[in-house]
Image 1 (tube, rainbow, N blue to C red):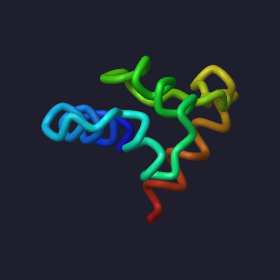
Image 2: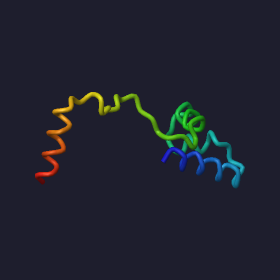
Image 3: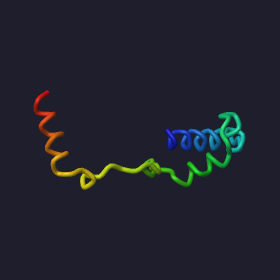
Image 4: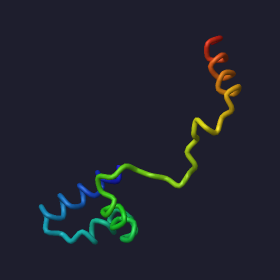
Length: 72
């Protein structure tokens, strides 16, 4: 979604010669958010949440999960 907005604003700003800041305002978007998105263009979305890791589980927990899946 982020890249689509950046592409849209860039494309129509160029075609119409209307300044990007006008499009950003019409989208009710904070300029700082737009320019932050522009810096991250083409990059994967990242978050600050912890990512579960396999090594966080005890071996017996892994086996219990596997066995419960096999029973379904």
